[in-house]
Image (cartoon, rainbow, N blue to C red; front, top):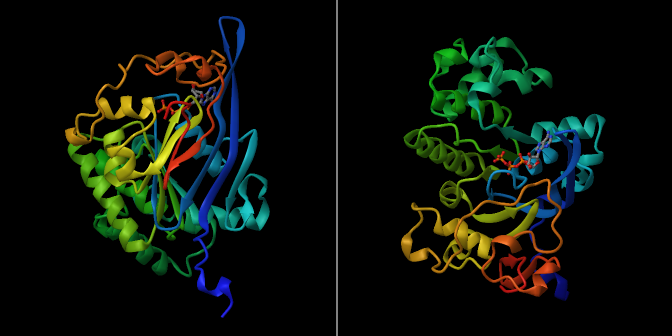
Length: 327
Ligand SMILES: Nc1ncnc2c1ncn2[C@@H]1O[C@H](COP(=O)(O)OP(=O)(O)OP(=O)(O)O)[C@@H](O)[C@H]1O
């Protein structure tokens, strides 16, 4: 037997984001500012995992998700999915990708059309792609999708205003799983919900992942929520990935001062796992400001002269990467 036969090939990532960039231009007080929302982000999502994306407001989480989906036009980089670069895809390749890659949005009030019934919203992708063989088949599949998310099929003729926030988000999720995709990008899917409902929706997503074999990118500013559902976590700061690792190792032994700060500010994470000596929270710098070197230097207690150069994201321990000169 050849040597190569004895070595299992590394599992190919389902989604690979390479060096993604996006700049917005904003006009304020008669001046034009450049906001580097995403500044060379590279990530992979492996089949069957939940990759959490976490960071404070404005760090670029939503822009990453929307750029992958093509809802925001990235300036540069590659999004490799289904064998090709989604940023260059068109025609049949793009249509296929749209079936396999779906999004759940933060605000279930805004993301559902108030004039469409629950059933029509859930059937939307199937309708666009002509996937239903008959009206009966459509009703059955909508009913199945609603059942999968814990809603009775009798919800189909109702309108969004008749539902609670949690029920609406379940409809948003049902819409994303008909037909069952390969990957769901969930952008702050529980942030608009009451805490008790948040837990139910998180459990539902974890259940669906197990039942349907879904892969997920889970975007949230709330580290406690991300910790509950993610297998691996990418921590974003000012448009950069500053730390990336397996959930347990990241939460037990965060190496970037920014991640340590986030963990210290989350009361719900096991106190024994909190890192002591973390920096005070403070505020991130204005996104209009151009920073030379490490984007966290102004808030960092470990800052030295070397921080004026940008630290690369480097592996420190197996399964763990950090962008800090002092990690
Ligand atoms: N359409 C836009 N036009 C101008 N600036 C934008 C636009 N979208 C995002 N930005 C800016 O890009 C930066 C990153 O925004 P983004 O929404 O991706 O961050 P985020 O981490 O998802 O934050 P939040 O949790 O507040 O949504 C912010 O400074 C934001 O103001």
